[in-house]
Image (cartoon, rainbow, N blue to C red; front, side, top):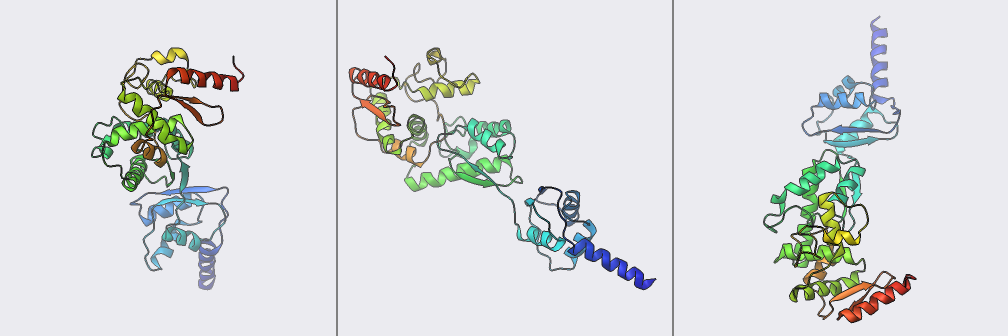
Length: 320
């Protein structure tokens, strides 16, 4: 009887520890900071990644005590208990990759984060609108974190809080700002850069586009930037996906057709090239620009010249 019992216990231990467990499907297990070994074992057993929580705890007690790392773990193929244990001891955490293109607004970023499984878009926007203390030293007049959520490819785990993810984006902005020497008139420069970013996708054009807007500011001309009107409607929740002539009269300080000067803050999150252009615009006398239909723009010093460029653009589109 004793021999049979010993064999049975030994067989169970071998089965519970060494027999690979094939997951029914890809399993994601979230282990938060502060979880005990008992809680970790229970979460793994609940997910069907190990056969026995008791065996996991026994394995932990019989081996040198590495700290088991918090994080999200993805289990896609069969593994034995020691293999699972080794992954958690190493901190082989699963990261969600999210790419934030240049020019994305905080609303665009919020949706990208939600699509990546990193939390609610509404929660992200709420943080971006309220955690201005993160930029208080850079831009004390900032009304939100718009403009300071630097475009980049990020890797986040779901154990990170939305505040930590937002903080990582602001930290990246600070690093780039330091690299390019952005240390004065930060809010004004970022606001200008956000408009430049929205107006052209061609990096080589950005210093020239910036010159147009600085020239208009110097002459106290309205900036007449369509992207600022779109942003005004995004803030109001009234943007329908396209801009119409009637929208140019929207009553918002972000509407640069109605209100002179720069808007109160950025209208998107500019990348390095647009920030550099806002810091170092070309020295020109241009006051207008319009698309040439091929991804670039025609620039003009006078309204008459601009009207000719507009006519050329309409001709390119087959409009008369």
